[in-house]
Image (cartoon, rainbow, N blue to C red; front, side, top):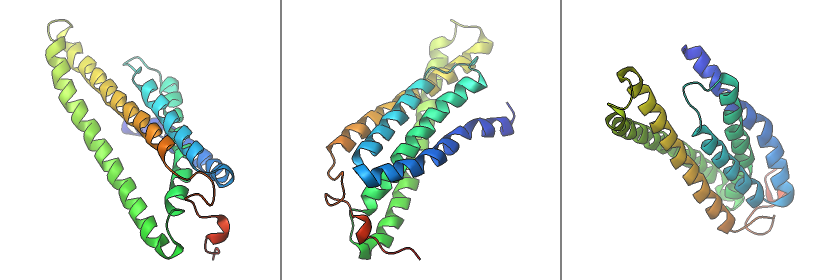
Length: 189
């Protein structure tokens, strides 16, 4: 697959996020951040689990749909989560909190990629050994890689389930209960 095609196949994630995030942010302003953020994590988990079903014959539209589910979840999660974090600190510390949030987000992405890469590398080697002699030599590497990628998506889905549980247990939810109300925020420039 050409690199441009692979890149285009990944665009549904940011596109869906871009569409849903403002809606989710407005919703969290009205009802609090806990429900939209928790539902968003759940939707990401469903998307990750759906990606465990891909195979060499998966069509582009099928893959796009599965990736859109992940993007929808990200859009539901990101705005309310950021609002809850930034709303939990005094106004005088918003700059520090915003910088820390960006750092933690970047660190989480890097750690996630490293863990997924380690899972895929380790499990591919394991599956190559397991499948050798059971499949034609030309198919062993491809099938081993697909199974290893499935394992990485299973782990990602499990992290989403853990995140949903943690999100359900956290405090706040409506303005005045761990979050800053709109009136407490600085005026826009």
